[in-house]
Length: 325
Image 1 (cartoon, rainbow, N blue to C red):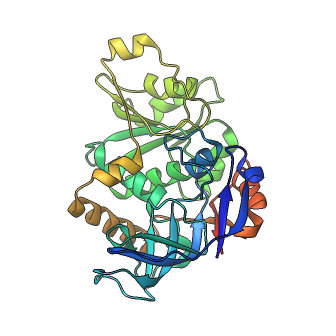
Image 2 (image 1 turned 135 degrees about the horizontal axis):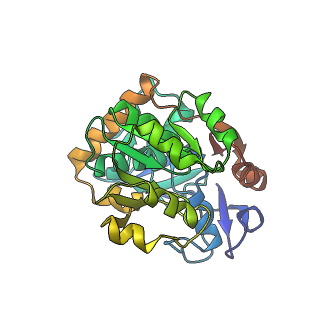
Image 3 (image 1 turned 60 degrees about the vertical axis):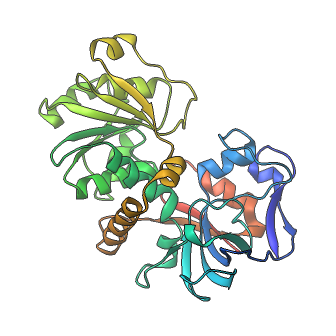
């Protein structure tokens, strides 16, 4: 079978290549899945570069989320059937024609859900809804986030609004405001304007903002912290621009603010099964009623991985780049 492999860490467009590997056999409690579509996430590319929290042994496969069809069952697997569509968000090495994973970690996909949406269901949408669920916010509360025009930012805005939360999004340029408005997402403020804090006060009417989400790092994290109310919490979700946070000590001290991290893969792994099931049902409902949208920027074959990586890094890209066998 075709499998994407890298023998060194580095630029994914340069070090990833297709190799032929034996089709894997499922062991007890495992399932072999024929991959249909798999999204390219930033953390997948960071892993190939060797800069993520997880560093595989070389030579290594790649990819962590995929939609596929159950192809073979290992001993003791009776909750799934051959031919059933399933998704996984935490199986390493899915950028291949086939992969093997534990049956317990696979999620059956409703028939009404298109392949392109199902392929993106777990990592980003589930992280977004898990993040919102963890914040303890109630209907009418205010939340502020940066990287509002990123994939997770869009999802937090859509899912938060569906829960009755007031979500303010920060973007770096004025064009991002119109871009998001065109997708039905409001409450967006561009920080390239000197008066953006005044505009924030006008938007909220002076209501306290108790939680901020930072996905950028650097001074952008400090911008989010500065907007929080006393006893507010800054949640660090990502580091798109910088691995360090530039936070004013005065904001932390005098606001008695808290700063904490959120790593979606760990949160998902440790989450009770009933809570996980409830959140996935909420995601299914939001996708089916159109509240949550998962656009696709393009679909590339495994052989076309260099072009796929380049497309994934395009500025202003809307939607995920997907891989197919």
